[in-house]
Image (cartoon, rainbow, N blue to C red):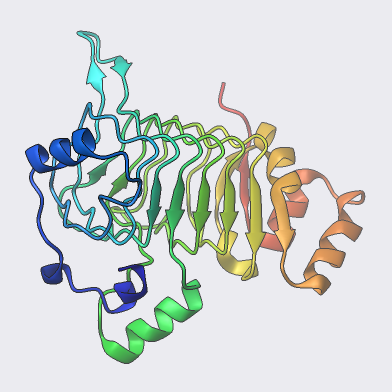
Length: 255
């Protein structure tokens, strides 16, 4: 179950086939019926996964990709709205977990333990770090009003999470590491970001027209940082404020 994730052991999870997943979906509406299984490298594209929980699953290389037309445009994304991926394991240097074009609004992603707790336990046990969303492809996905908790998105890695042209509007990021993430083509209006580590947005990349949305999103857990940030909001231009406090890189809008 989810409490076992910090010492993750993929061999302990029962591997399912697509046919078995289809049977479970057809036979029961129990939200928790698909928790803690091995779904790695499984193609579940086109299935209705809405309102289901995948807590504690091995989801490395899972494919929930969409249908495309002849011009490469998405016709229909897999429906996984209001799903729960808490403590699901995505870290992979192999095939990406394919969430491209997915309908995942109002879903939950992330981990019960903080990044500090996960990283500390990883150092002590030499186990894999479950907090890493390595190999997560969310390009063109619909992730409106999702909750993202205690995730290291590995923005500076070639295997890091991809959200190109995704809709993250209204989403909440709590205790996540967003360093070196490229959000220049991501919808972020109405998002909320709770920051425990001021370095967690270091070199996050946005455009000028996203700067105010990002400023409005930020909530520092540390009261001193919060007070300092609020005091400077009226004194500095948005792009200067974000860079001076958080080292966020704000670029001029592309022509």
